[in-house]
Image 1 (cartoon, rainbow, N blue to C red):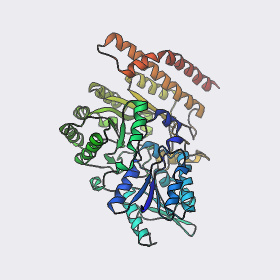
Image 2 (image 1 turned 120 degrees about the horizontal axis):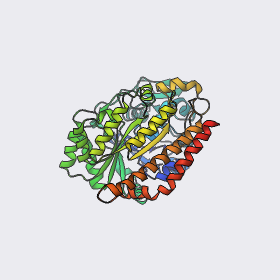
Image 3 (image 1 turned 90 degrees about the vertical axis):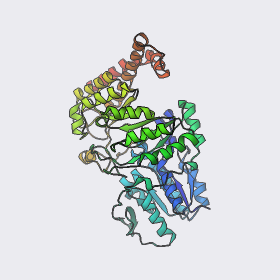
Image 4 (image 1 turned 135 degrees about the horizontal axis):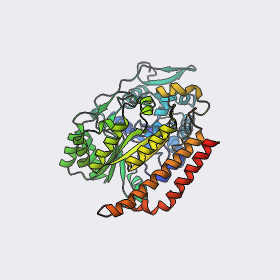
Length: 486
């Protein structure tokens, strides 16, 4: 029998957009928690909720382990878990309730629980791990196993006593990431993830992290777990895990889910050298900042290592908005970095954000022009989303009423007063997507007549879908104009 039940709070079932995309990733933070528990001789009965139909799927396992600690843990790497979605919170509350019915001590670690720790305690949780999970979890488990209820000396805890809420001192982040054991990948049903990916996408991807934290201070970006500190695993440590994923688990593709990939000087060069030395054949996507992608040598090293896509927080084509966000980047850097990536066969992909306070029509038009001029490979569009702990949240929090979080990742509800109505930004999202897909199709047709070589499957698909996107882009623009007039 295991010492604890260990699970996660992200349910694909409750996120319709992600179900359509069908690009599920295992709960990486939960696998790290399992690894550090195992290193300290604490065994876990692991349950993966990603494919679970409902929170109740874990109830039999909780009943089997009645009286034992239930640890519900998500990571601070995946943007889906950092978004603090209400559907996932409610599912977590259901699990907490059933665990308490079975006399279990409930321990929670997630971005949402950090932001709303009192709500989780009110739902019945006994302890909230504030910050990184590993060291706090081990110390707490040692206390519980020893029957020691004195927890005030354990940093990074939120708890309730006699109806009052308490937090212990903040937990210092882990500096030497190589000391953390590698995730326990064998706990996951890899074949189920592989099957889902292959059926929908034709390849198999897994997630990895090489760093924790971000030193930059975009004023809308929430960092509840790792904060503004930045620490990196060594290239050697990363490639050790990669070798296992590529050679043993036979992945085709890796998503490096760091906030910023390869910020440490010399890291990318050494990583690329090791990948090539070990003949690791895989493609990968990563996230980075445009101002860190202006060194052509680094771009060359990334390409040689197998980099396929880089997602950058372009956010806006208006320098006024970038400055208002405290982004610390320029529109000119977006242009230069995109050109460098394309030159070396890496696909630039843009995160775009509409609705930031002060944005007007000229700013929106500038973003759309930038998008069409640069033609990234793919885009992700959102509206500004205020999360606790950010300067942006403090600016608009008085406008947030009952609704303060999205239900799922595709809701995109504007929850504060901006230049236009929430309906406008919903329609803007549809219009920009249709306009961009139309432009991609037209670019594909141009390539047929101006470039040698065969078109890729994606390029052919974009041409074939042009008869849909041409009229739909005009129709969505018309609806957008009607909303403005009304």
